[in-house]
Image (cartoon, rainbow, N blue to C red):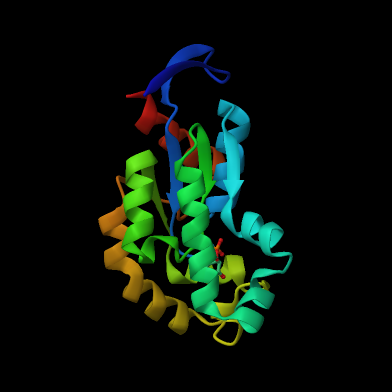
Length: 185
Ligand code: S3P
C-alpha cells in the first residue's frame, strides 16, 4: 500500500509505503536512532522492540536473559513481531537477533519492507562499548568477537533484507534520506 506525504525538507510530495518498515542489523548499527528520525519526519509510529519487550516483561533485557534465558527472550521477541505484523505504518527498530528466526522474517516480509543497516565491527564496537544492557556482548566486548558474531549472522541478515544501507561514515540525516528515497521511488 502506498500513501502520499509532504516531505518537509524539499516541500515536495512523496510517496511512502504505509506498510511497516523494519530496520534490521547488528547491535549498534543505528536502528533505534534512524527509526526515531524516520518516525518523527514521516509521521509513522515507532516501535523499539527491546524497549517494548522490557515494558512487557517488567525487566531489562539483561535481566530477562539472566533470569529467564535467551530462548525465553527469543519467544517473546517472536510474539512481538506477530503483534506488530498485524499493524501498519510502523517503523520498527528490531533487535539484532530478530532476523535469525525464519518465522520472524516471514512475518516481517508479509507486513512490510526490511531494510538492513550495516556497519563495520570497529564502528559497532565504538558505538556499543559502554553499553551494559547487551547480554550477548557483556563479557565479549571486543572487535574480534563482534566480527565473529557478525560473520555468523551475515547470511541471514542479507537473505532477509529487501534493501541494504551502509551506515559507516554517514550522518543520521544521510541515512534517513537514503531510506526515504527507497520508498519514494
Ligand atoms: C540482540 C540485540 C539486542 C537485544 C538483545 C539481543 C542480538 O538489540 O535484542 O540484547 O541478539 O543481537 P539491539 O540490536 O537493539 O542492541
